[in-house]
Length: 319
Image (cartoon, rainbow, N blue to C red):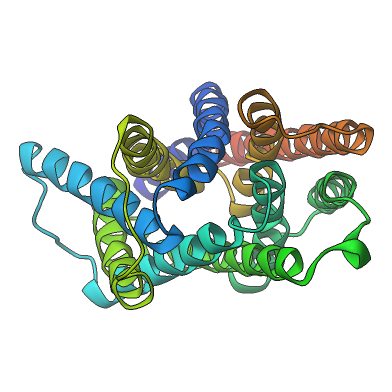
């Protein structure tokens, strides 16, 4: 009887708190959507690797200060090696490739390419986490992929070599992010999210700093209001706080659902890029955005079914 009660409580705990999840997902997509503007603007004032290094040094410093005041600075039951690997995958690799690629690609299109991540995440989760690749998830991935293709455009053959290289770098970043999601689920699902984000950011920032010193030691850094605000926004709000929210979402819902839900980010990235950077929004972009919204709708249906399934199992156990 006690085992049944514990199992019932576990099911309840695992059932996603849908209202909180949806609110945090919307907040996350808005923050990350705006971040693309700052990420593009700041490249006028420093090299891409230097910016990525400063971004995550500020993120890790902020999180370590928070942990200090919460008296949770000491790492327990978390392997340092795993934190280093996560930092290399989630921070060093992703933001090396994406910030360098943004030298040749518009902010809006950069966000679209990085957010092919949900497709890779869904496929990898089915392979390595045994998450069922349901029909609803497949449909949502197809709609999301078609939407990204419309926004990305069918102009690959007309791209310059530098633009094509930049786009390929960002796609590599998307795959690295997907791998990091799987690694987090396998290694840190029961760990302190704040600690995980703080220390993976720190290890990732160390990797970024080494690359910046080697590759950009002679590139000037211009510190003014714009560059400082860009580093602080992307470091504290879009990294320290937002990736903590992201790890929370990975714990609350399955990897594919969480990944598909943030596909609103490239839409916000396009809108804010148009408003603040005068980037053009085309008809194909609008069509693609509609496909993405339909894909997100199917993702939410999948999430609802998972919640109902958990509740029905819990009721059967009680009975």
